[in-house]
Length: 190
Ligand code: AMP
Image 1 (cartoon, protein in one colour):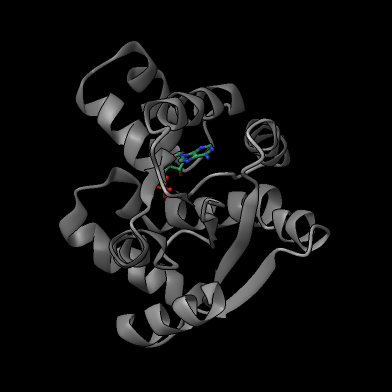
Image 2 (cartoon, helix red, strand yellow):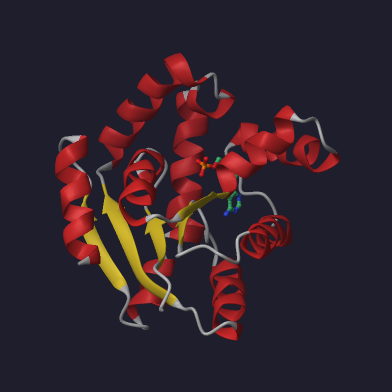
């Protein structure tokens, strides 16, 4: 059976984590969020976590080889998965190429890149709101939030062209109620 491997794409605050929770339940997928994996390393006070924390707290990306290694390990740990939702990964062209290489080796390619589209003002508003309860250092300060959005625009947004060239890009309106957006995603998955 073909695996339902999906990249859930979008800027910080677009709702990737929230929507992943619905999709994994609906389709029985395994959720792979590099942000969550990195925060777990920080919590466990590993060497990797300590290194990543400084970059994350400034809203900078962590090096490609770190997140690629984490994704590789998790995919190997879940060979039984019906598919994966990649959330917050890939974020650079090198990451996208590494992911394609890993998946093509198994003939289990990405079937779609679903890109949640939300205007910047709305993103900043959502992230500042989340900062009040998430305890995330990178959600507290507007300058850091804007830096994360800049990183996204410079390094990550160009991946829309990468997946468009493979015929996999699908833009999804990310403004509305959680349920409305879930329905749009499910329609796009088909
Ligand atoms: P997120 O939870 O996806 O918003 O990620 C939080 C932070 O973790 C980002 O601002 C980056 O510092 C780091 N991070 C998460 N995923 C990646 C990735 N794929 N590549 C580089 N850095 C990442």
